[in-house]
Length: 502
Image (cartoon, rainbow, N blue to C red; front, top):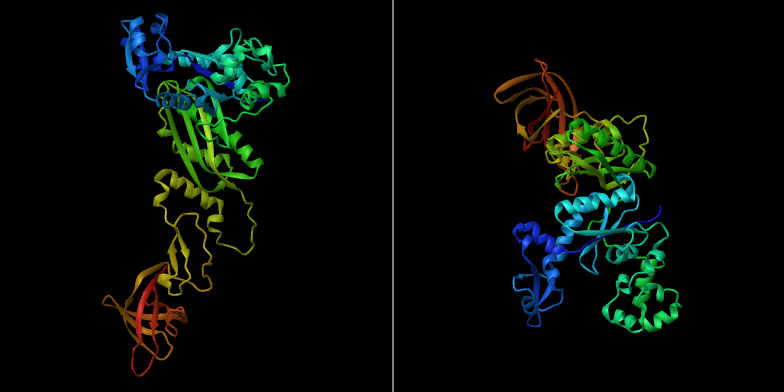
């Protein structure tokens, strides 16, 4: 794909911003000034002030002498960057890769490769940006070219067309002044002194001569403009590898329209992820409204997936949170977190797949989408032997355990948190009780199975054990009882009830 870049130059960034905030200044010449070595130096001028002869770099006192009605406003060093950052965030609707023009601190650079077709081509793309920024109150000049340097040069100094065709950056630069190469003032002064008033007067000279006369930075800037040197943009946002955009010809206001947009985005995104063996873990849908506001919703999955239907159902749960207002003009679907999708190997004798069961995973995702993942608790087998300590609460729903569930013996459907002492009548030494008394009620045992001996961990208390019995009383109730300790002359053994079977 041919790389294409757009330069947006805000010709009067601070002045336009001030007029947006204070429309009453529209008929008043004003400037911004900042202290410099004890003097107030003008940093930005309004159009009315410029018409009176006031220029950037003048002393505020001299400017007041030229224009007595001039209003001087205090400037702050970080204000232009802060404004550009906000404008860059707004421009994300036009490109995912946006950088601040650090050289002039009065513009933005966009990597628009693969974006312009969403607005009917490059001309329609530039027209849309200019129109929208003008409606916000900003005066801008734009240009598009194969390199950021050429786009910057034409947007600031070009006089013919802002659309530089592919491979046409050299021709577009020839008639421009050297200032268009983003050079420092000492180098520009040297060029003017030598009579180089246009780029074409030196672009054909040997590079060794140019390096010796003007330095390495000069060659770098020239190369960045014509495309022989690479220029890396530092984006305001780190671009997401898996991201899809959908621009709308007409603003979307209805739930049905939003669902269609989501489904289209998922089709493209899931196709890309599937081709690379990846699956979504976190998804963010960002909706850009025509009133300039941005709304977003996010989803999460318990396991990596590229199932369109499953992800669509998760987003459906969040659509009510999207307020389209006057309409949504652009949808962006990002997958900032993806994982490898593992194809599970089916085991003939495994009947407890747990979170390896796709239906379980999708159920958890839908429940989490409705009530939040924080209310879902999962329990894993622990390395302890006592039943009340043999499970532990998982830190997360997707946490893995190094220990397998013990399935060789049946366990009660309800396990008491702490075993409850009971009174029993039992035939010694290893017979189940004939009856037991629990909460004042006598239960006569009709059926019993056991004992199952469970010993405590040897590293905690060697020799301590429990003998468990499954018993059923004459009413059909089934209980899990155990005897703790050995029968002997000291009679230190005790009986407990620990759970109930269904």
